[in-house]
Amino acid sequence: MSRTVALWPGREHPCMRITTPSHPCLPMHRRAAMAVFRGGAYAIHDGSGRGCAEFLADRGMLTAEVEYRTVTGPGPCAEGMGVYPKPIHDAARAVRLLRSMASELGIDPNRIGVTGFSAGGHLASMLCGTELPCQEAEDDDLVGVSCRPDVCVLAYPVISMSKELRVETAHPEEHCDGNLGGSVGHLLGPHSEDEATLALLSAELRVVQGHPPTFIWHTRADDCVPVRHTEVFVEALEMHGVPHKCVLFDSGPHALGLALDGEHANDWSEQLMAWLGA
Image (cartoon, rainbow, N blue to C red):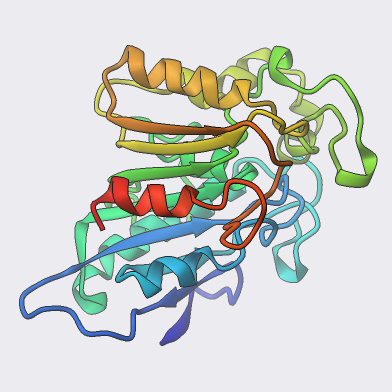
């Protein structure tokens, strides 16, 4: 069963689609919940990751697939170049809404995770620090509710805004323009070369002790978002003693998504469920 909840008062979009598992919970038991952020290089919000929310709901979690504001949309979520910090506001709002609605939704407010694909992985990681990498939205009436997730799942994520970790070759047909699929420019616009902002939005620099446990996977053959993004993030997790599992596959392109029936990385979801103890 699914329903749509608007993220912000008085606005139909962006919104999140909440899916409740069909099978009932045990008495007195509250479900875990997972907010899902699909990829799209901050140009769209519904790129790779299709079906992930339904997959997790089929395995007992309440899920929320989250719209967030991007450069071109789709539709009412279009904001133009330099969309920062609006996607972060939307992501934080989604987690806060889930936590504030925990009793109504029958979920445990201390078991709310985030899953992000590609640029959606970058967005998910921005919630995992001790504070947001931006000022709070002026119209967020839930700032007193924590937006920090209890677990983090990242699929071939954009992690670092560092110039050293951008790809060198252009692949226009895949929107891989040497700028992490366009993510940096779409997110930051004219500020995409500002060193302080790039550092602020580099997830590997935001890891501290107490960071949410993290599952992360990537392919070494990814030529859009280099596997080094995952490697530097894992190094930061290890440095700060954060529980984590990293799965690296030798082959497979960027944006594989759920990949259940694909040729590459088709067991990452099984490994995730085992890691979660589901």
